[in-house]
Each structure stands twice: as C-alpha cells, then as structure tokens.
Length: 177
Image 1 (cartoon, rainbow, N blue to C red):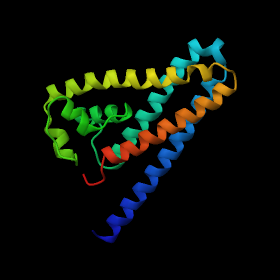
Image 2: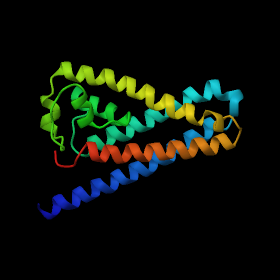
Image 3: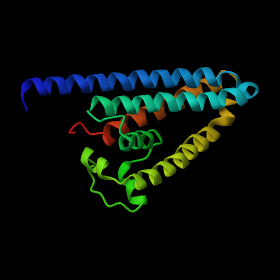
Image 4: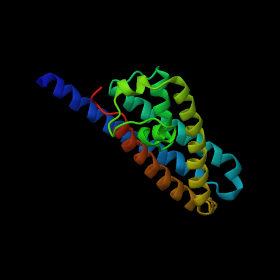
C-alpha cells in the first residue's frame, strides 16, 4: 500500500474515533437532560430520549460506513446501518433469514443479497430496535424516576450504549471496501 494511502487511511480512522467520542458525549448529554425530570416528566422525556439515542447512533453508524467507502444511498447498506444501530451483526441476521455467509462481510456480498432478503432483515431490525430500546429503557426506568439521579443514570447508560454501537459499526463496516 503506498504511503499516501496509509496516511489517508490513518486520518479516516482518527476521524472515526473522534466521531465515536463526540457521539458518546452527545448521547450522554441526551441521557442526562432527559433523565433529570424523574417520574413526573417521564411520559415526555422517555420517548425523547429513545428518539435522540436512535438519531445519534444511526448518524454515527452511517458516518462510519460513509467514511469507509460504502454507498449510504444503497438500500442494502442502509439495512446494515439500521441493523448495526439496533445492535445486530450482519452475519447473524443473514443466517436468521437463511443466507449462508462467511465471517467477513464484504461490500460485494452486501450488494448480492436479494431485495426480498433485505426486506426480511428490515422487518427483523424493526423488532430488534423495539426490543433493544424497550427492554434496556424499562430496566433503568425506576432509577430514572428519581430527579437528578435519573439524569446521571441516563447519561451513563446512553454513553455506554453509543460506545458499543460505535465499536459494532467499525466491525460491521470494514475499511477494505
């Protein structure tokens, strides 16, 4: 690999690391602000927290995919962006709908998946998002019910989840496109 290519690759990886850090900070702020009100504000703040987390995480995953050379306007890639946002892995989801793949998923394999399979995966992703954000949020609802303490719990949980999504995006969208 020529020196210039290695340098640009390293620069992209630095940008990705910064995006992850900024997204973790944004998610932490979102979790803190929406957790401040306790039980009284929860009917409004809980859906806002979930929506905010989804937007931050989807933006992060899409950015990583784009920086690594994937065409984010391609419906196949969009499915894998949503899948990664939901916390899934492409290999496990494809196997769930009967597609055999190796451990490494390449851009050509993504594009070779029939649109009917992509639709099945999209249906699974919807359920995964509901399960992920429903169960994780319900597990911390009691802690978030106490004003201010709920903000701290929300900040920590959202930061940790966004960091996990960032790592999954790096794994699910390899640099060798």
